[in-house]
Structures are given as structure tokens and as C-alpha cells.
Length: 465
Ligand SMILES: Cc1ncc(COP(=O)(O)O)c(C=O)c1O
Ligand SMILES: [Zn+2]
Image (cartoon, rainbow, N blue to C red):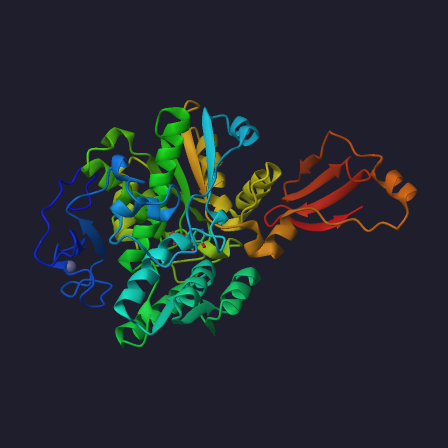
């Protein structure tokens, strides 16, 4: 099977350019990588993957003129040496000792992809994808987006001087992301439908030759994104002398899950990584948009498209993950899993990460929420070493951040009153009580001994006294 973890390397076929070609993961048909624009297989419409006759090894990374950090450090494993770069990658792998202790596992690190140029991991895909578009000489780029893809595409399209069109589900995209797409100069269409409808339409536009598609269906996007996995393995190994047992990540269209698995397969193929050292890919979705988790729970190889999706984590509000045929084998072959978490679990994880200085948007916190849930269920041992990916920055969705955090307290412009106001600041608390109706009463000794009343499903503050 072409997606097996230990699939053998192949000789470059006649259609290859510099040892790279496109291959259909369903029927195996091979295509030239750059001769024509195609996103799926001409014969069976299956997903395409970029394949290499000489898969990358750790020894190749950063060699020669390659930069020390970032996506292009890994150019030996990419289809060309230089893309449209801002630059991207080289994101922090945070230590979070307090969260690590609370979760109760040996090692927890947080790979904060929100620290990319436009604030999400999508930049890694765009540096390669827009680079291909530039080479192909296309005159209009497009994507459907829950927000972050549009922000990244607008920035990279602007950088390359190519027109950019983005289709967003109306009313379901965080304002920060729309602001980015707008200021970077994209033309923004708000569609009366969800993300999956937007993707259907943008695929139609691409099929009619009107736009160059830069969703993660485009196999070159995933090439850039697989470098997250390379970075995690290199840095984790440098710090701990081992590779992480598990990587937890949020899942929407499942592009990242597919990309990480592809990178690991290539390292196994090149002999750099033992199959037993490949981290267990653990995808996390929101309860209201969980077709991957459903397929894994039911042991199915295909997902069922969810027509109705809802979650506060709007970035992963997706009911038809198009990369599932690549991602499900990744989850299965690494011994991982996929689960769903509630919006309140996501909110709690977002607050927990923020308490240790890591500011992420709601979807990103799903990775930690999933880890906690698996740990509570006893599915993760206390000697595990885990990396959680946080995919987007807190400032992407300030409304969500503001609702999750505390309210500012109005005070008069008088130092004595302010001193009096903060005098009850205590290092204890808050104390919380949860009623069966899922209403929480929290006592904050730190905030003038105030009592807050929460609706726990949404963690919406109902009142504070
Ligand atoms: C912040 C964030 N996290 C996770 C995802 C999901 O990633 P994927 O579609 O690769 O599964 C997205 C996709 O838009 C995102 O913006
Ligand atoms: Zn095919």
C-alpha cells in the first residue's frame, strides 16, 4: 500500500522533475509535478501526493546554503529550493511545566504554530504552494477558508503580486482573520453556507480554470506543512534524546494530520527514523464537527460528511475533511487515534495554556483538551512524552479570548481607591461549585472577593458580584 509507514522508495518515473513527481494515492497513476495544473488524479479523482526518489533524511536538513531554521531548512525534502517566503516556520516548542504536572505525564511540549508570520501554521503551506503558483505563472489564487488559510493566502499572494480571492462562511470567521485577509489585499466573498460549501464552490472555480486552488487539497501545501513534524522531531530529540511518543493536533480538513504522517513516512523511507519511533498521531475535533473522530470510533476507512456543524472553535468547524483518505491511514498506522472534545473542554484548555503564557485561539486548544480527555480516560500512560500542536495565535480571535478571560474592572482615577480595590488579592482561589444544571459559581478572592456565575457549556459569564 502506498501509504504504509514502511513503503519502499521508488525510482523516479519519466514524468519526474528533479526526482519529484505527483502520484495518486488511490490508483498509483503518476504525473509530472509542474507541467499542468491538477489537484486530483485525472483517472480516478483520488488525492495526489508529491513523491521523491530520494526522500529526506535528518542529515540532509540545513545542509549547504539552507537556512538554519524554518521551512526552507528542510528544502532537501521539498520539491524546490526556495518559495515565496516571509519567512515561516522555526516556531517555539514551549516547555509548560505547570500544565505538564496537571496532566500528569512525563513530558509535555507545546509547538506553537501561532508564531508564524500571519499567526498560523498555514504559512508553511503557502510558502510552497504560492511558490508553485508563481512558477506556473497563474494570475489568480483562491481558497475556501475558516479564516486562517485566507489570511495566509492573502499575505503570500500579496507578496508574490498575484490576485487573491477568498471564500468564507458568512458570520463564522473570527474578525482578526478577516481583517488580515482584507488588509493584505484579498478580495473577500462571504458565502451563505458553511466551509464545506465554500470549498465545493472554489473547487468548481478551479475546475473551470478561473483560479489556482490553494486549499490543502493542493498537494504542494502539505509539503510545507510536513516541516512541522521535522521541526518537532529535531528539536524534541535535541532536548530529550528521544522522539515524542505522541503528537496531538486539532483536525479540520485533516491536512496537517496528512502532512505530518507524510513527513514521518519519508524519514522512515530514508532510514532516518525507525517505524517504532514515529509519534502516534492523535487528532482532536470539536464535538459539533467530528466526522474523523466518528470514523475512527466506528473503525471505518471513510468519513461520513456532516452537513450541519457547530463549534466555538470556528477554525475547525468542518464537516467534510477532504484529506481524510491521507489522514486516516496516518492515524491508524502510527497507532494514534481521533477523538472529539466539547466546546467547554476547549475553552478550559485555552485558559490553561494562556495561564502559562501560551496564547492560542480556541481551535488550537483542542489539542490539549484532547490530551486531557485521553488521560482522564486512562488511554495515555503517565510515562508518555507528548507534543501538542497549537495551530493559531490568540489574537486571531480576540472575541473568544475576551470571553474566556476575565473582565476588566472599572476603577476611579485614584491610587488609594485602587490600592483598596486590589487589597483582597489572594494567591488562593478561585473556588468553584458546579450545579447539576451546569451552572458554575466561582468565588474569586483575588478580585475584590467577587462571585461569578457561569454557564458552563459556553463558559459565558452570566453575572459577577
Ligand atoms: C487554527 C487552526 N487549527 C486547525 C485547523 C485544522 O487544520 P487541518 O485543516 O489541517 O486539519 C485549522 C484550519 O483552518 C486552523 O485554522
Ligand atoms: Zn487515481
